[in-house]
Image (cartoon, protein in one colour):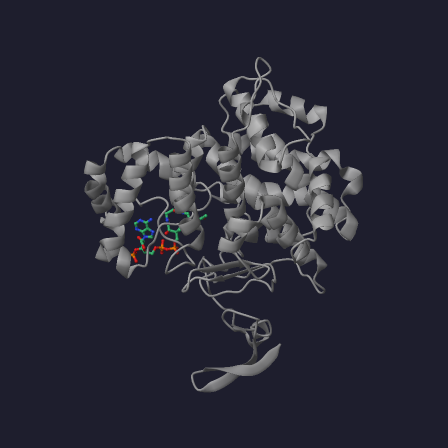
Length: 428
Ligand code: ACO
């Protein structure tokens, strides 16, 4: 993989010769692993120019707006694959045959129930607990139900954990919602698709029959697909770092959920809808654009900007189309969509956003779709976490199956005090 070398010289003196590694696509990377011996570390807070691992799962070219999972472009997958096919692709590396797909669907479908004791676990939460708090705690607790199946050196046990997590996350997510609204938990149904089953567990009640709307199921499935994986983002890197110490997969996914929760990451979809509601009317868009540009105001346009995409977010393109389709097919007129479109137009024409290459990201339109499906904004990030679980667990699996895997242990630039003398309290 190393084809050429970079030499590092400091004050005219050669310090190190570093191999340059070539991937199959994307930037070449300079392998700095031997640099520590020379007395230097590299400094890159926020990982602006650091490849933290080698991976063959997802490729992003942020300049060109490219996103591919295992080589398949996201637009193709969103159009022609269902979410479980995408899960299979992420986990196994290539598209399934018909028989492989059917077997995979069967395995996932047969893992959707959770232990009844886990059902009781919810009773410890206050009724108005945020569903992300419940998701984080309950998923972390899952490991206590599988303590005899947590050998992370066994590929079969690892794959079983992956299947369990993909299967059970919608059940747990829907339970968190039901707990919030004070309705009984609804058990999964094996005759429904993954997306249909999630909507069934969210919205059916024992008092009457619930029929899943096919338009809603299709939109839900697409939202799952568009969030399935995204290379080494904050939550995926968190899962990898937690997993690098040998932590069990349920604990690692709980760590990923915690990282996703922040408004700069997966929490942006909830924050974006709150922002659109706060703007409320197209006439106030200019005022909020001004606020976003004001350096003395901490307000940012939620759902705008991305560390990697500096052209457009290809997921946002599909999400935007889906948003228009869903609202028109369901016959919903949502004034928030008008606010969103006006905001997008003004921002895209404004030099502040153009110069900083700030475009709508995947979260800009997803909230409007989820709202149209009757999902409350507190569940938006939960749905993101459910969808991303397959990405997290695929990265965890890839990391553990690579030879020479090491614990993640960054170093630092120390700027604190040194060599002070401690004086005991009795001498003061
Ligand atoms: N609104 C207004 N200004 C912004 C925004 C925004 N949404 N995003 C970035 N900027 C400005 C910054 O103020 C900064 O300006 P400056 O150069 O004058 O100081 C410049 O653009 C660069 O911003 P950074 O924060 O340095 O960019 P970074 O790559 O670190 O951050 C991030 C990316 C966190 C996504 C940021 O754009 C943001 O906060 N967006 C809003 C939250 C959001 O939508 N997050 C979801 C991301 S997608 C996902 O996780 C699924």
